[in-house]
Length: 359
Ligand code: F6P
Image (cartoon, rainbow, N blue to C red; front, side, top):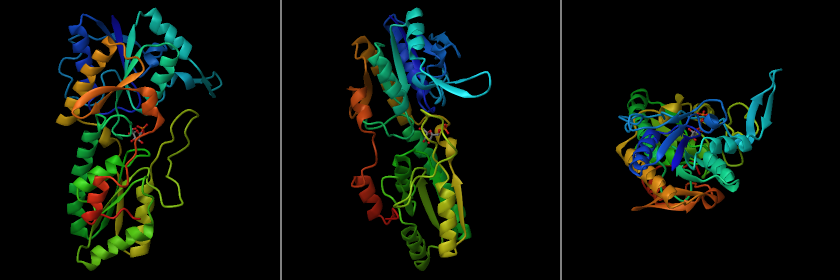
């Protein structure tokens, strides 16, 4: 058996722990393991396919990033190729990819990625490739699994940032608006906001009214709490409005979100007269060492993915359904992306502890 691993989409802390566990578990079965570098690009001649041995994965379990590198630009079905005149054309290179995998004698692929990479995996499975998925994303927006690895690390980083913002906001009687990642899901904002004792949490699942946000700031002032910490998801938007985007995305690419914190801060300062600052936590959330929780989940996913390959669970993704790791059809997972349930216990507890959602 010759299997290959690929890490696609944005990186997430824990990728190396999945790679390590999957490589060691495969070698334990006497299989050969390869790594496809840069998502699927390694099978399209842009990079390479490298053998993965015990030595390749030695001492990487605690490291952030991915030794295989990653890209969120390499969709083989919508590949962007630059013409000699500098313009970009979109081509379908999936046939070439499948042919290259066959030529290299790759029997199966473990595709480690978020919803974008899993959608590509499903399309490749439809064309006869043998793929097992592993859910990865700091956003935690993949259905079928209680959590994805990378999420816990991102939340921990964001909580640490909130802790630091509290002291400076309080010293200066300021409002500080912190923007966190998550695309169209508010899990990172909700979890770090509650755990970090933010005063307002804004998420895409609960459109906000800026006046309600300002009311919360004023109410805190009246109570002698002259500072406020607001955590906003990058995808949060006002009722009747739309999420702020950064630049234009190429066809087949997901739009990049961001910039909402600065517009919220401007509005709050204008409406309340309070000095307001904003920051975008950005890629700090994707970097650094994975937490113990993420390392363990990643290792369990890596081991389970190898068992799923042995069981020929093609088109399935490993998933956490506590306390078990199970497999679920990728097709089902893609049908309904996971979002924050506004009636969930986390939202209810946040509200009960005085956190405003601006609604
Ligand atoms: O999906 C992970 C994620 O970090 C999102 O939270 C964020 O919107 C996006 O990727 C950022 O992508 P990039 O690294 O391409 O800017």
